[in-house]
Amino acid sequence: MGLIYPTVARSDKNDYTGSEYFHNFRRRNLNTKPIVTALVCILLFSLIYLVPPIEPFRSGKALAKEIDRLIEPSEDLVFYLKARDTFLFYTDRKAAVLKTPKALQQYMASEKQVYCIFKMDDWQDVQMLHETMHIVALAGNKLIVSNKKLD
Image 1 (tube, rainbow, N blue to C red):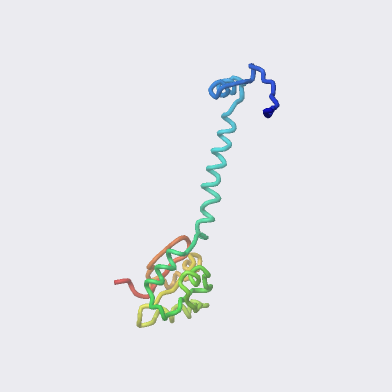
Image 2: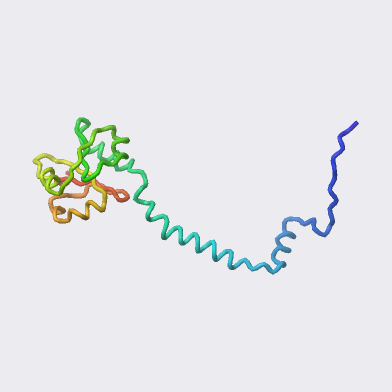
């Protein structure tokens, strides 16, 4: 005794092959231009307004590896105004935070080469000290500066 499968009655009128289906889809007078235009507008809006604000928050892994390469393993990371967790995670170091422009100026006046990690907004706030600092690396809205140019 074999299995009996239920059958569904099909009318030949709706049994389309692939090309016939799309041909009949176009014949239904559906206007696809507004749909395509809306999708393109959404894509452009996303690229122009949503992606740029997200860009600064991308991982600082590359910059952390760069600072790890630049400074001695025994030295702590130095940040201006706020420590960035990403750097601490990827470098497995301790951090010192410079809270004022005066503390930053004193730190950058060191005889040995020193490095400080900034957020771009904070970098722009200390414009009066830019002559004493050199940008070593930049990624997203984070940058590493030094008191001396790299050799």
